[in-house]
Length: 159
Image 1 (cartoon, rainbow, N blue to C red):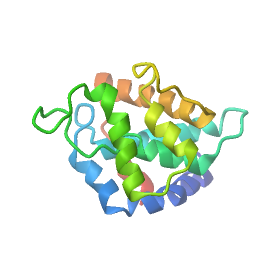
Image 2: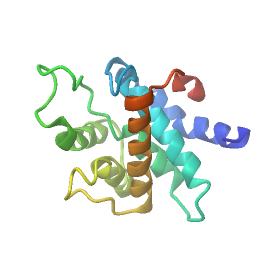
Image 3: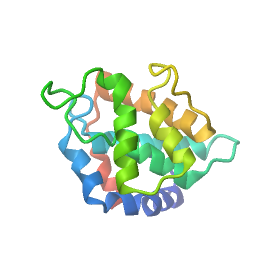
Image 4: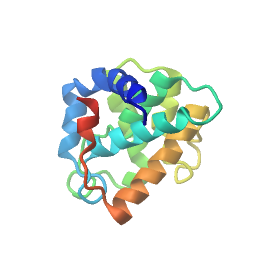
């Protein structure tokens, strides 16, 4: 990412990163040693980076906000006593409910959150280009975190 893109990304993510409930995402593991917050930052950054390289217009703020909140479910899905059954299928709805409680969302952001697990969630299809891009970025980041692991902490990207 260029310096200009990094500055823009940081400025667009700043409000969410200052939110106490978003910061709580750091407490919950996602894939391997990656927290849900770190995963969401990576998905948002990759989505933003790809959006700048595809010759299509994206609603950038909605893309980034949706990506940051796509896993805003606020529990440890690895612990049976905390997790809901069928986490992979149900957590997008939980994340959307939580995001609606804490933030004013538009339809694009809602679709990004609810559809990010497609095609696992067959009926929750990405209905806008932002949702499709975040869905792809989520798969890429999840695969990398699960198989390879990430050594660096992406939170330094938003300071």
